[in-house]
Length: 127
Image (cartoon, rainbow, N blue to C red; front, side, top):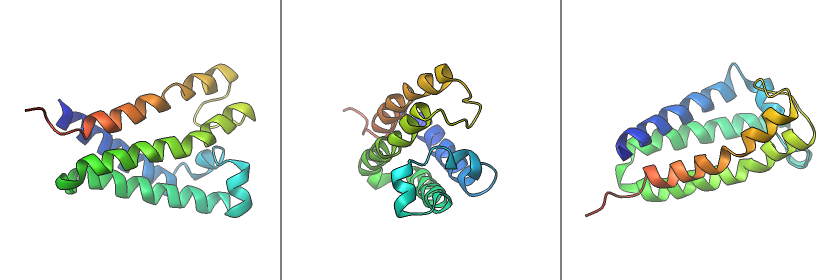
């Protein structure tokens, strides 16, 4: 079950990373916090995070000896991007069909699930 969860997470991360680079760049720019945009262009943040997602996703399946570390890094990544989700809610920025306060608020509750998924799927088997 953990292996399937890890492969699914890997595929989701690679897909999300590719979407950062190609078809959803503008949508992701709505999630870049203003403070990050003061340091780096919003598009550059989106591209960098997309590359990171592709690398993390691929690493989950090609680096089996590093799974636990990768799980912690991926969980930290999900925590690091959470302020963008909060800012999207607070500043009422539309993106990915999140065009109401209720939808944007609901999305916030999924981030802890992603953290838990990353940690659980990369935990070594018992026994």
